[in-house]
Structure formats: C-alpha cells, structure tokens
Length: 135
Image (cartoon, rainbow, N blue to C red; front, side, top):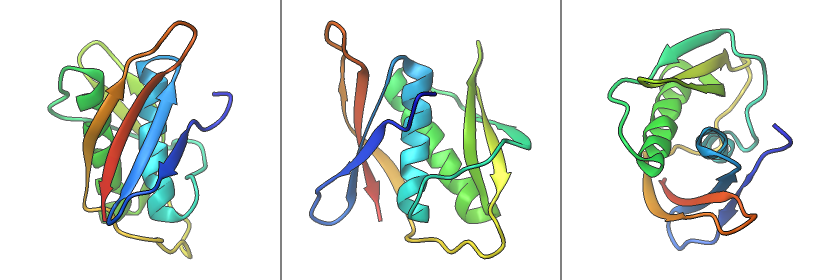
C-alpha cells in the first residue's frame, strides 16, 4: 500500500473518520487502521503473526467496513492485538494481527463504529467512506 488513506474530521462528541481506497479491500483496511490509530494515538505497525476470521461477514462494502473495524477494535481492547493486514476471500475476511508491545498505552476507548455515509467514486477518484467512532 502506498500510504495510509484516512483522516479524522471535526465532530462535537465523538470522532468522525474518513477513509478511502482504490478498491473495497484497501478501503476496508484503511477504515480498520484509522479506527485503531484513533485508539492508539498512532497507526498500528508490524507484520501479522496470527490470522482470525470475521464471523457473520455482511453484504456491502460499507457494512463490511463497519464489521471489520468493530472486530479489529475487539481484538485491540480485549486481547491487546492490533490488526495490520486484511484478506478478503469468497466467503469472508481475515484480520492479520500483531501483539501490542508491553508498554503500549491506549489513547482512548472506542465503544463502536457506525456508518455515516459512503461516497461512490467519481471518474478517476477513490472509493470513500465516512464513519463515526463512538467514544
């Protein structure tokens, strides 16, 4: 991947996250990395050493992005493992995980990720998505 493609947007109580990608896989990964960057105060890094499947993989890019981000945050908060990779397959998806270093402190807790809006690509543009991170 050429670089991270997400940013936070102003919001009164929670955090809005805008992400984009050249295709659905890159878009979903950037949503996952962006949500974790808010929680950690920086994007997660490393090479995946464990893979976990995502159960109940929904239809539609926007629902898949929300599901993947919520699953990644569960592993981050419950098991202290950050998602650094994503694989999409015919029947579902897998998250590539890396353990957090022992001295890593979480910047904030995200309770849930919800969809705000999908921006379809225009000619020559990337697929974009805006989500709300419920703190």
